[in-house]
Amino acid sequence: MEACAFFGHRDCPEAAYPVLREKLEELIKNTDVSCFYVGNNGRFDSLALKALREMQTEYPHIRYFVVLAYLPEENIENSIFPEGLENVPKRFCIDKRNRWMLNKSDYVVSYVKRSSGGAAKFTDIAKKQNKKVINIAEQI
Image: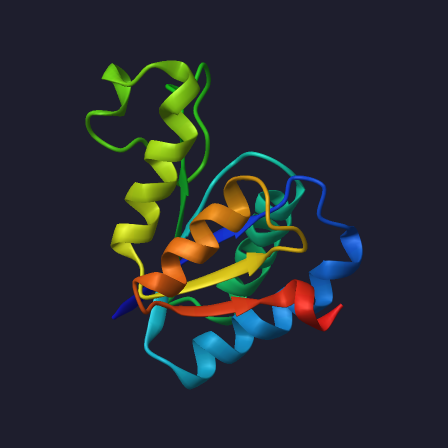
């Protein structure tokens, strides 16, 4: 079983959704990816989570986890909070969470249009680590 993480700009347009869903379907059908790690910050994360929720009915073998950067105030469905993150200063939590997701993943699906920001940073790190990266921004 392989895993996939998501990194994308928080201002990702809704128009990315059909391409994102298509790429997820290709991963599920054509690879051994059945575990997905998604954050909960910004539009791209919410689009990825929407797609995974919908696709789990069609592909019941897949699992997805909302990986939290901060301790939640309320219960979030399918959420996990990486061990040790509670001791990280708040300004570093998202970075630390993203590193955790990247270390657990073989694939990365991203939406990166500009070279600045966390999405670009972690997509670049994924490439340097020879992860399989699919940047859907290149197809929109």
